[in-house]
Length: 217
Image 1 (cartoon, rainbow, N blue to C red):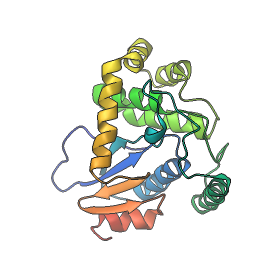
Image 2 (cartoon, helix red, strand yellow):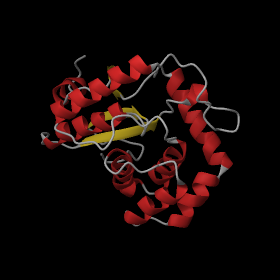
Image 3 (cartoon, rainbow, N blue to C red):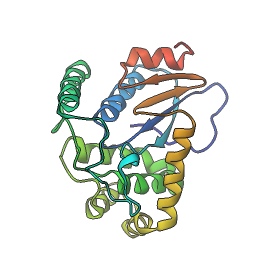
Image 4 (cartoon, one colour):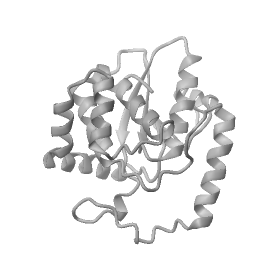
């Protein structure tokens, strides 16, 4: 999707942050919009990814998801979501193998992605793209550690390190802290794009991202 942020932005280079959860179809579509915007830019753009857990309010103490928790999302909600996904697919000319991924848990994928972002920032973009592709193009379960191992191997990263990272309770707790920080910052849904003090929510079109980066609401 984008170049991983390494902690600083060179003078004169624009920057945008994105909060996203891999299981959110609108996050996938939002990254397609962002990619289209970047293709039309002549100047570099630093993109900083922040993980976000859409199922945070449904997790049991052991980290599993309690699907019986009422989150207010009924059949009507999901049907409307599917319609919106189809509309944005047409708008951004994106093909997807599925419109909703309610049975997939992204936590392991986000742990793996955060590890790569911090330890191998130059290779994070390729891994991020591999995760999105696996879920939304190939309908693979990105919560499966074996699937993640294949994706890591495909971008020439050490498989054993990723397996260890996903199983590391300290890393999982650290990721939960990142989710909490996002909530404290006022992030309530994804994708959310932030540039300076300007915010755009949802899979907004490339021209909207251009206005955001340009300092317009």
